[in-house]
Image 1 (spheres, rainbow, N blue to C red):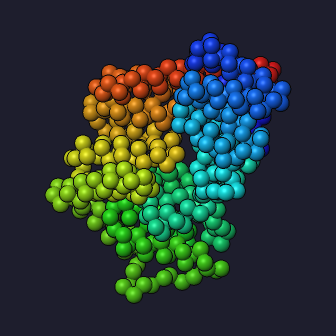
Image 2: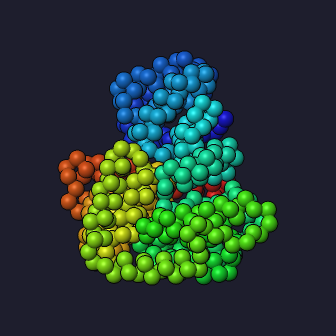
Image 3: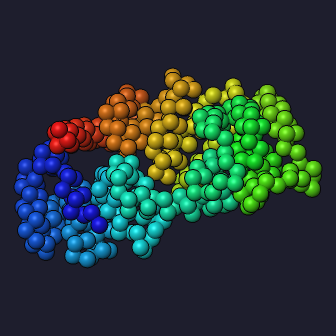
Amino acid sequence: MHYHMLIANTYSSDFIRRFVGDSLAESIKSASDLAKSGNYSDAIETYLSIIDIDSANANAWYCLGVLYTQTNSLEKAIEAFEKSDKLLPNHPPTVANLAYLFADSDPSTASEYAKSAIISISDDEKLTSLANYEEKTDQKKIFVEAREIEYIDNTDQDFSEHPPPESSDSFEEARIMTKTGDHTGAVSIWKGLLEESPDSPEVWRGLGDALRSAGYDERANQCFKRADNLDSEPLPAPPVVEENDFDPAEALLMAVEDIQAVEKLPQGDLDDAVGWYNMGINLLGEGKNDEALSSFEKAIGGCPQSEIDLKVKAQNGRGNALYNSGRFSESVVAYHTAIAMDPHSVTGRTLFNMGSSYAAVEMFDDAIKCFTQALERGLQKEESELCEKQISRCRLLSREQVKRQSRINSQGQ
């Protein structure tokens, strides 16, 4: 494990002085000196005394986690790192160490922490392996149980028998259309790809995703069955004919027509869309982020074109669900989509959430801009105080980031 390496560049002395004051900075330096000399027990006691004075000291909790790990007190180490993570969320060394500690006892939890860590620590093979663990298992779990609309990338499947088309840009364009509610455009793209590669499981699944997002679950399931059959076939097989004489080309044409008809109907859809949105809010409150994401996307897909306000709210809900799932870059896109739909309706809370997403991927300058604008958009008193605290924290972390990059550049010269 990389505990020595990770603790070395975690917090500089300048950061500590600015963040906790001179007296505590001296105590932290004393504790650090004890740790470096190998006097772990006294170092632990010193850090504990610091926490007695300042229980919100993320650095002290972090260093305690390292020391507890080195003394094989793993449960205490996990507790310390978790407290540090709550105080300074998604700090790369903290979540990396949590990933290492959970690797054997709880691989799923380890994977979540590893996914956050590899955003910044991308060259660590152990972290990459841990991050991939849940992606492999969740691919089936989400598809079967949670019914997540956006299909997870199929990099672990063997498509050697049925190579997908080379139009990866078209894949991404179609998926973006689905996310933004342009189901007609998405289905049209998948139709063109299917004509080029009728035996590609990935294209069939993409079409299934587009149909499901538009509310056509039965036809979507037929596409998924076709993809599964192609995956299991050693040789190209004749066209699959279901009991209801399902024809792929006909289904595509019908889907385009049906989606166009649905999008033209001003009544009926709104109630369904509101229902999906409310369900998404409830699921989000229960911590069921994947299912909440699915509900918000269904709300967006079924919402009449004129109901911009509901679409904006659903996109913000998507952003929150993605953020809670650790998919920070995607959450930024969702918040931007909401703002682009109606720039005048953007709230302080939306900007605060987007700032939090930027901070999570260490884009601190962008985070500061979002937090600063959020203060001008009617936050509550407690929210404003938290926003100002986040601005101060991001400024400190931004300066540390610049210094760290300067050191790296100077070492490389």
